[in-house]
Length: 235
Image (tube, rainbow, N blue to C red; front, side):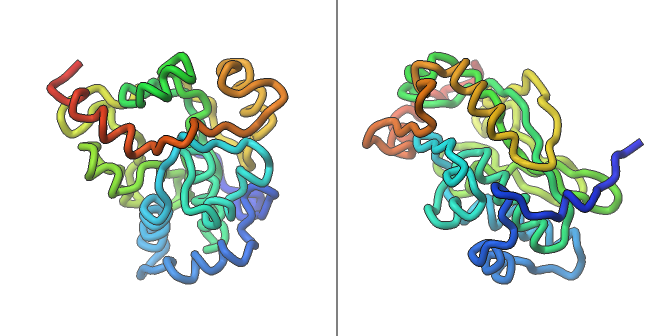
């Protein structure tokens, strides 16, 4: 039996700050459609494309993980972008919650691999929206321009089918592999994410720190340098 939404799936939280003026303004600008499904599709694609994906700048502080912070900075990685989608959906009256999984990313940069010492990305975030009597998965992390530039298949959302990472990119290279489902949460489980990041990525994120920047280099520049070498065929 499908679990039903509760008032918590429309509520504001410190991370899912649906009441923030910037979140409210974003909803007013992008909440478009003849019905709830069309409105949800518009909001998913707006969050996906209006903010660039950037895993080089991770701030695990409560302020750094707020939905409104993504709007303020113009970028985010998968978890804060999923949190923003949950916030704008709730602000638009669409029940939303957060989902998490561990994935193997076969298209990370050398800098990221050397820093993390693994291709396993724990606590990859996505959003579930309650539409037409069921929870639908939406993954707003990779903006369309990033996908077009580097040969990734964009994750479109139609409000009917789940939208999760493709196993292969447009050239047939291995892309994402889901290895562990962590379930769904009504609010951001930040303490658990921080503890697990410090355990798994200790050299990158020391126990006494929550903020990591991989130097001055730009994520898009690194991907641009490495992408041609990664795309000759399936691996």
